[in-house]
Image 1 (cartoon, helix red, strand yellow):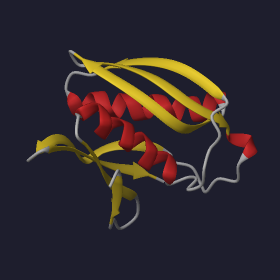
Image 2: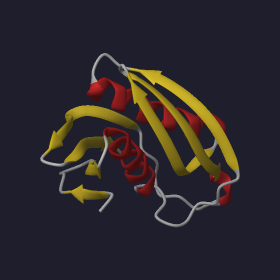
Image 3: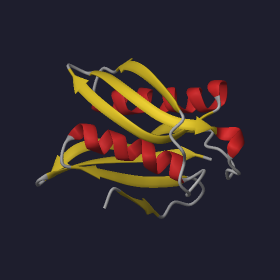
Length: 133
Protein backbone atom coordinates (compact mmCIF):
# COMPACT_ATOMS: atom_id res chain seq x y z
CA UNK A 1 0.00 0.00 0.00
CA UNK A 2 1.45 3.37 -1.05
CA UNK A 3 -0.88 5.56 1.03
CA UNK A 4 -4.20 5.63 2.85
CA UNK A 5 -6.63 8.39 3.68
CA UNK A 6 -7.70 8.88 7.30
CA UNK A 7 -10.82 10.49 8.74
CA UNK A 8 -10.62 14.22 9.33
CA UNK A 9 -13.41 16.67 10.13
CA UNK A 10 -12.81 19.30 7.43
CA UNK A 11 -9.54 18.67 5.64
CA UNK A 12 -7.81 15.72 3.95
CA UNK A 13 -5.49 13.59 6.08
CA UNK A 14 -3.31 10.78 4.79
CA UNK A 15 -0.44 8.51 5.68
CA UNK A 16 2.07 7.55 2.99
CA UNK A 17 4.40 4.59 3.30
CA UNK A 18 7.75 3.46 1.96
CA UNK A 19 10.63 1.08 2.50
CA UNK A 20 12.81 4.20 2.42
CA UNK A 21 12.12 7.77 3.47
CA UNK A 22 12.41 8.76 -0.20
CA UNK A 23 9.65 6.34 -1.13
CA UNK A 24 7.44 7.72 1.66
CA UNK A 25 7.98 11.24 0.24
CA UNK A 26 7.19 10.03 -3.29
CA UNK A 27 4.00 8.37 -2.08
CA UNK A 28 3.05 11.52 -0.12
CA UNK A 29 3.16 13.52 -3.34
CA UNK A 30 1.01 10.88 -5.10
CA UNK A 31 -1.51 10.95 -2.23
CA UNK A 32 -1.74 14.75 -2.37
CA UNK A 33 -2.38 14.76 -6.12
CA UNK A 34 -4.79 11.81 -5.76
CA UNK A 35 -7.06 14.09 -3.70
CA UNK A 36 -7.47 16.26 -6.82
CA UNK A 37 -7.42 13.63 -9.56
CA UNK A 38 -7.67 9.88 -9.07
CA UNK A 39 -7.13 8.78 -12.65
CA UNK A 40 -4.07 8.07 -14.78
CA UNK A 41 -1.99 11.13 -15.68
CA UNK A 42 0.16 11.06 -18.80
CA UNK A 43 3.89 11.73 -18.57
CA UNK A 44 4.53 14.58 -21.01
CA UNK A 45 6.42 17.08 -18.83
CA UNK A 46 9.62 16.56 -16.81
CA UNK A 47 11.04 19.00 -14.26
CA UNK A 48 13.68 18.95 -11.55
CA UNK A 49 13.26 20.59 -8.17
CA UNK A 50 15.37 21.09 -5.06
CA UNK A 51 14.16 21.91 -1.56
CA UNK A 52 15.68 22.02 1.91
CA UNK A 53 14.29 21.71 5.43
CA UNK A 54 15.56 21.99 8.98
CA UNK A 55 14.12 18.52 9.74
CA UNK A 56 12.21 15.80 7.90
CA UNK A 57 8.81 17.40 8.53
CA UNK A 58 9.99 20.76 7.18
CA UNK A 59 11.53 18.98 4.21
CA UNK A 60 8.25 17.18 3.46
CA UNK A 61 6.26 20.39 3.89
CA UNK A 62 8.58 22.34 1.56
CA UNK A 63 8.51 19.52 -1.01
CA UNK A 64 4.72 19.29 -1.12
CA UNK A 65 4.37 23.09 -1.19
CA UNK A 66 6.77 23.26 -4.14
CA UNK A 67 4.62 20.71 -5.99
CA UNK A 68 1.51 22.80 -5.27
CA UNK A 69 3.36 25.88 -6.55
CA UNK A 70 4.15 24.04 -9.81
CA UNK A 71 0.51 23.02 -10.14
CA UNK A 72 -0.66 26.61 -9.69
CA UNK A 73 2.08 28.40 -11.64
CA UNK A 74 3.05 25.89 -14.35
CA UNK A 75 -0.19 23.84 -14.55
CA UNK A 76 1.74 20.66 -13.76
CA UNK A 77 -0.42 17.71 -12.71
CA UNK A 78 1.88 15.10 -11.19
CA UNK A 79 2.03 11.55 -12.55
CA UNK A 80 5.31 10.28 -11.09
CA UNK A 81 8.18 11.50 -8.93
CA UNK A 82 11.68 10.25 -8.06
CA UNK A 83 13.14 11.62 -4.82
CA UNK A 84 16.68 11.64 -3.41
CA UNK A 85 17.32 12.95 0.10
CA UNK A 86 20.71 13.73 1.62
CA UNK A 87 21.55 15.97 4.58
CA UNK A 88 18.06 17.53 4.82
CA UNK A 89 18.17 18.40 1.12
CA UNK A 90 15.83 16.91 -1.44
CA UNK A 91 16.35 16.58 -5.18
CA UNK A 92 13.43 15.34 -7.25
CA UNK A 93 12.58 14.60 -10.83
CA UNK A 94 8.90 15.12 -11.37
CA UNK A 95 6.80 13.99 -14.29
CA UNK A 96 3.30 14.91 -15.32
CA UNK A 97 1.02 16.66 -17.75
CA UNK A 98 -0.79 19.96 -18.20
CA UNK A 99 -3.61 20.13 -15.65
CA UNK A 100 -5.87 21.71 -18.27
CA UNK A 101 -6.07 18.29 -19.99
CA UNK A 102 -7.92 16.85 -16.94
CA UNK A 103 -11.05 17.55 -14.93
CA UNK A 104 -9.79 17.81 -11.37
CA UNK A 105 -11.60 18.10 -8.05
CA UNK A 106 -11.26 21.28 -6.03
CA UNK A 107 -7.59 21.82 -5.47
CA UNK A 108 -5.55 21.68 -2.31
CA UNK A 109 -5.17 25.16 -0.78
CA UNK A 110 -2.16 24.36 1.39
CA UNK A 111 -0.08 21.77 3.16
CA UNK A 112 -0.24 22.09 6.96
CA UNK A 113 2.03 21.10 9.84
CA UNK A 114 -1.08 19.98 11.75
CA UNK A 115 -0.53 16.35 12.90
CA UNK A 116 2.42 16.01 10.48
CA UNK A 117 5.14 13.47 11.13
CA UNK A 118 7.81 11.52 9.27
CA UNK A 119 9.16 8.50 11.14
CA UNK A 120 10.27 4.95 10.80
CA UNK A 121 7.84 2.45 12.32
CA UNK A 122 9.28 -1.06 12.48
CA UNK A 123 10.54 -1.76 8.96
CA UNK A 124 8.79 1.04 7.03
CA UNK A 125 8.74 4.82 6.82
CA UNK A 126 5.45 6.62 7.45
CA UNK A 127 4.67 10.24 6.55
CA UNK A 128 1.42 11.78 7.80
CA UNK A 129 0.03 14.98 6.30
CA UNK A 130 -3.10 17.10 6.64
CA UNK A 131 -4.04 19.16 3.58
CA UNK A 132 -6.22 22.27 3.68
CA UNK A 133 -8.81 21.86 0.92
